[in-house]
Image 1 (cartoon, rainbow, N blue to C red):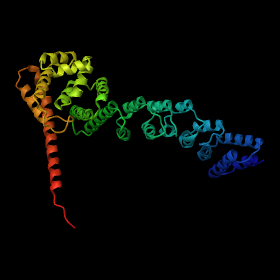
Image 2: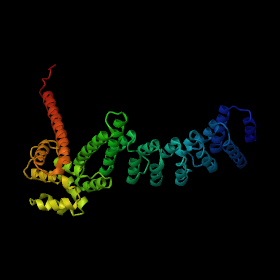
Image 3: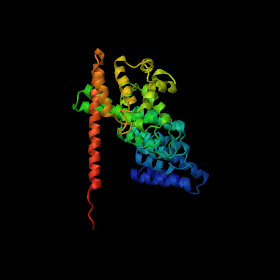
Image 4: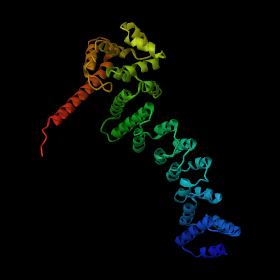
Length: 389
């Protein structure tokens, strides 16, 4: 009997030889015309080989049985629970492993095992959700890169919450054209947090200064994102900003000074609980008291109200006419006008707002200078003489 001879030979064979012989036995089990007795004996021998001290032998079994429905289930299930370099082939390819078993195996602390599961040809919603919840960064990245994975937005949001600061994961998500604005903004916030932590850890800036700079950078990126957000998706973005604690008076004022009235309207509707149509009427009503009532209902700080009032007055005077850059950046003329008007007032608690407006003025001036220089360079390139051959 061939299997009996194989078992006798195993006792003295080297690990590499045992692995080759095990691979041959497994292929014979699948593809040779063995009698029922020989099949039973071969399966018994392979079950015994699950206890072989050499991972080479167990890996040989895994490689042969990984992609077939005809493998002995008991062997596949045992291999799936082996060490990572043995289990990987069956975790990646075996059709005999169901979601429930794979989800249990995700509890392993081994990123290699988690990544193998995330790389399967088909990953169901339930399995993808489990990977998003407990998987390490490599497995979450493998999931995002897997075209056969059915990933819900909730799972993506969970990955962002856990690993949005991981560059490879962030780059993968930001490259997705269908990524909703709230999720994209959450990634921007994670990036800002990472940059603040990096800068302060290198002691380039104090922690408070680094956090302040990161917050401003995040707000600036959020306004740019809002400028590209379709009208129908703006309410979702604003709701996300409120839920994440980012819908502040400073952000709304930045939007107003950038000319993004749609974002301002949605923000005030979200904070006040009023219908968007009523909010729009209040904002565009020349009666200042109407906007004052809306501002108060939205719960925004009294100290910032003069800046909002002056910014709305500037809008009504057409101060944005002729400004470049769309609604993605602060408008220098408008910021400086509001700053001058606020600075002329005598309220004691307006100083923090003036400080904020001064920062906005510096930022707007830098952005305007940058755009001016870019235009000059572009003009020079267009006017440069071409050499004729």
